[in-house]
Image (cartoon, rainbow over all chains, first blue to last red; front, side, top):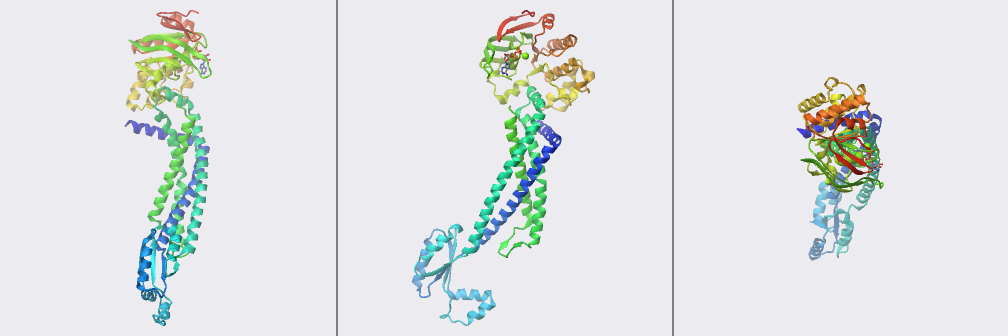
Length: 299
Length: 229
Ligand SMILES: Nc1ncnc2c1ncn2[C@@H]1O[C@H](COP(=O)(O)OP(=O)(O)O)[C@@H](O)[C@H]1O
Ligand SMILES: [Mg+2]
């Protein structure tokens, strides 16, 4: 009962002083709001990027073409060498016949064209399709395979995917820097809000210490005040995230540019993102108030 | 039995001023003790050492069996709950009523509402302010304000009541009012009272124990003492 009573008192005190220092509280809340909107965008973007880079990476395959004059033993040796490369996750072997059948199934146009070629004339080759464990090392793995005898060309979706992953990672870095800078400014503002509250209540704090209030009892209202600022600051960002993402998803019909880039389904994603935004808001508020308490409440 | 034992205590402030030199004394439970001496003689410092507002630079300050000098900052509140403190400037909260000011002390330590009510009304009765429960401090005389502060100090039934110049801002009549209340608390509740003052008249009238300090040194500790320069 006692802790609940003390908590109730602390929350009451905290709400009172948010109202009392309204202008500075509002400044803190606005700053948290701006920060959290950017954080929300960063969260939504980075989750989506992760989602589709994973999807793309899953599809990234090294296609190994075997020279036409290779014998069965040669193929076996190529297979053994591929098997030994540490970054190789799995591989499948397709004869040119299988390749042809697959392509014929995929498209009518291919079917008619391919039908005109006999097996000897076919430009198609026997292939290994290799999946790698670590996509970042796909280039060096491809080079290793290329150096194997009787292997002519190695292809993988290097161009586009590489560029995309690089672009996203640099965008991610810039976002991190902006978010960190904004969080620092926000914490600074919260520290000053709480400092004001502390000095407005210095008399009360002095009396509390005299009559034997424990340190936690004295500190809690200020910490909670910071958390309330954080909570209030996350209201607009949560609305922004929820409705913003829903509208965004609807507008693009769930895909960006091409079918390759699939957006995350709004539900339950918007709720998870909102929760993260709220937690970050409250945490930032708490960090600000805790450091103010440590700095200005010498007890 | 001794409630307070001070052994070889020295207090030297950070600026190099020594406020207390090699102090040794013991105060019995239930006694009423004046601490007297001129301005700067170390009275306030002595009181502050007792409620662990200041730490001695040397020696032991034992209050109710507890060495206060060794108490960690985080644990000071445990000591404070066992004693009451009254100052010259009352230190009331102007936005709270008399009742709320006294109740504040118990709310801060998480006491239940119904117990708070009983204890607050009893304390206010003891200081003769039962009819001013809903007044604000600004509407009270200095003597009444100080009695509210005393009620707040005793509301948690402390064994020890420390007073630093409680009559310093009061005229002689109001001072006597306050002294009557203190004497009453000492007698009926058995609370040990230590009061720093430089008011000769009060000390001479009350005929209590007197600790005399001069420039940080203990000059005298007399039963039924008077104020002598
Ligand atoms: N916080 C402090 N810092 C430095 N010196 C202090 C402090 N408090 C008191 N003093 C010095 O200690 C001496 C005793 O002061 P104090 O205990 O307040 O005496 P009194 O209450 O008898 O007037 C004085 O010389 C005073 O200047
Ligand atoms: Mg003094």
